[in-house]
Amino acid sequence: MYKLCSLSFITTNNYNTNLQTLLTLINQAPKDSLIVAPEVCLSGFDYDNFEKVCSFAPIAIEEIKKASTDKIIILTIIEKRGDEVFNFVKIFHNGEVMYERAKARLFRFGGEEKYFSEGSDDALKIIEIEGIKIGVLICFELRFKELWKKLEGCDVIATPSWWGVLRTEHFKTLTRALAIMNQCYVIASDSLNEDCTKMSGIIAPNGKVRRNGNRACLEVDYIEKEITLMRRYMDVGIDG
Image 1 (cartoon, rainbow, N blue to C red):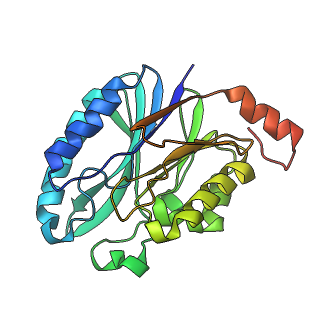
Image 2: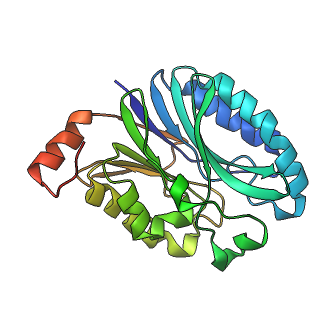
């Protein structure tokens, strides 16, 4: 049985420290885990040191690949491609990057468009790994209902986030509503940094919410039958 794992920790100014924190939590998670870390958890939005951030990305990627044996790991990493910088979500499994896409809806209220190039909605897809249909919404993307529709039929939707503390109730409400609407598990991982909600958690297909609280890693059993039963009990036309 797979375990769903929501991570929550503080991102420091030291990228290596952040990477070691992440790797420690990954290594402590049981075999056959689906692990979601907060958005840009390795560097934060360190706009003053973007060249350093981008040069660290390939080092981190190789280390996470090594840690992904018998595990599915989802997080976002800032990378440079040509002359453009993107916030890429990546799904790692068994030593490979199985899927990646750039954040398609940048948080203009926070000025992200000044630093990042925007990805495409067309790259948002459902990917199946180990029989689990997985989709990812990156932080601000959670607010766009047309993106929810694209992920209809997922078993698990991951939402790696760096969500502002002033909008904590929005994060809690939207992640729960996403699970209820799509009748699937939602793994919501937000940073423990002061300006964030600290509301990482896992929401079941029936809307039951478990939050990390003071746990760096919250583990919940992935029970496929819960998805099937919810979709049969409350049939709203979702296949899968």
